Every structure is written in structure tokens, then in C-alpha cells.
Length: 339
Image (cartoon, rainbow, N blue to C red; front, side, top):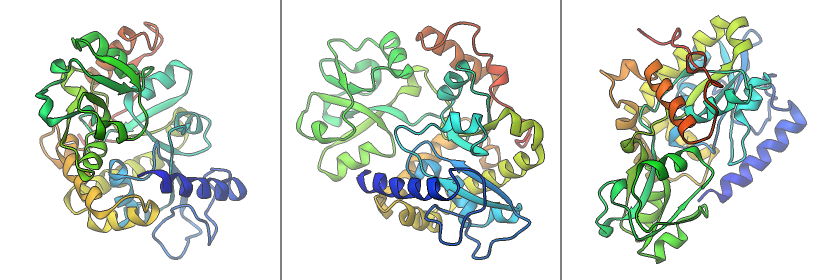
């Protein structure tokens, strides 16, 4: 599914290295990287880059909606959205001010700060983590604690996996490396694997498997996902820019969850591996995750200290960071979010 996207990323990367080295410099007229939907560049625009943590998919839809519907343009920006990959170094690029903004998950933000990456979370569009374990529907498993007597493919070094091992029985479960595809799942009834709720289960069903996803968030490990972040330096020196970008991003997410069609057409252009069907499935899966625990769509992006403190404690328990190395209070700000 993602092979063509990887080729596109390689092409985009070459363009960036030759042209502007991933900086916030204005895009050239014929740049291959996704740019503002404005046909004419404005000399007075604020040029910023937004680095994604993965290839363009539904999980980034709100940011692309802000681009496609002109919300970034209306706020005075010329924005280029840079696709990521499995090895994306979003935190480092943001911390070094190579890009103004990035997208990453909350647990990785805390892990980055533990390594002295000066990054700050600004906006959390996905309130409930889409991370899960994909199982065969006829396995009878209805929650993660039920999983037993299977082979489970995961990225064993991930913090959420260590949390999973410590907080779920997982009787007679053999852990193996995650292969990056659903091929083995399709042929082995006693096989389960890590998944995002709006991705791998859909692919497996399209290929004839009866699959469902059990969310890791339901056992307590629930980091904010697709979080918008910037550097501490940018936050201090360009606070007004940050405020405008967060506001436009919020509007983008509200639009994407309400009427995603135009944005999805654009996503198919920049990532041809995405079909209309999987993007629509992605939006349907995202809506309840983005609105989880919120009063209405106006509160999209909200973050609480309690959630960040809980996550920091879980990372310490998982052995991912040492106690007192990360201050969760310094990892995020809510000053740019609606009250």
C-alpha cells in the first residue's frame, strides 16, 4: 500500500535537498513538494514548513484541509507540508529550527524532550490513540486482555509494547517483529499484529480477512496523536505566528471531520496509494477519536496536564525514560487553544 508513497517521498526529498534543504524558504514555482493552494505566491506571506511523521493519510487530514480550503492562506501563510516516513526525524528537525512546525505523537514528544529536544506540543487533534492490536474477528477476543495463544507482531522496542506486556495477561503469546504488512495475518488464523484502527484493518478486510482492532488506549496507554509541535525558540520569538497557525489548523480539522471530500481528493494526488474508499473509512474512524471526551468540535485539539502527567509516568514505568528527566508541564502549551 505504501510502496508508491515511499517513491514519492524519495522524489520530494531530492527536490528539497536540491532546492531548500527542508527549510522554510519560499517554494519554487515548479517544486514537487505539496505547497499552498494559492496559484500566485505572495511576497508578504509567512513561509513555513510542516513536517509530517508519516506519508500523507487521513491522520493528517485536518492539516491538509487547512491548506486546501485556504485557511493557512487567509492567516497570511505560504505552507509546504513535507511527507514523512518510518525514519522521519520530525523532532530533531523542529528542535533545530529546520522546519517551523511538525506532527508527532505525544509519547514520542516526551521521549524527544528526554533527549534534550526543545519541542513544545501546541494542538492535539486526535484525542484517543488509534493504536491497536488487529485480531481475527472469529478469535473471540473482545478486548486486549483476552488475547492468548497467538503470535503477535509488534515493534518490540516501542514504549506502548512494554506497557502492553506489563498491563495485559497475554497468555501464551509469542512476540515477533512487525513485518510492515498484513500478508501473514491473511494466512494465519492464530496471528495478530499492531495496527492503526483506520489503516491495517481496512486493508485486511479488502483482501478477504475478517479483522477488527482492539485499541491499546482501552487498557490505559493513550497518547495524543498527530500532535502539532514547534520549537521552544519559535514559541518565544514568533508567538503570533504560532497562534495564527494553530487557529488555522483547528479550523482545518473541524472542516475535515465535517466535509472531507475536497481534502481527500488532494490527499490522493499527493499520495496515490490512498484510495477514496480508504480515506473515507479513515475519516469515519477518526471522528470518534478526535471528539473523544470533548463537548463538541470547537474543543478539538484540547490537551490537559493530567493526560501528559499520566503518559510521562507510563514511560517511566516502561523503562523508556528515567524518573524526573521529563517535566510534562513543559512539554505542551494550551495558550493558543480556545478556552
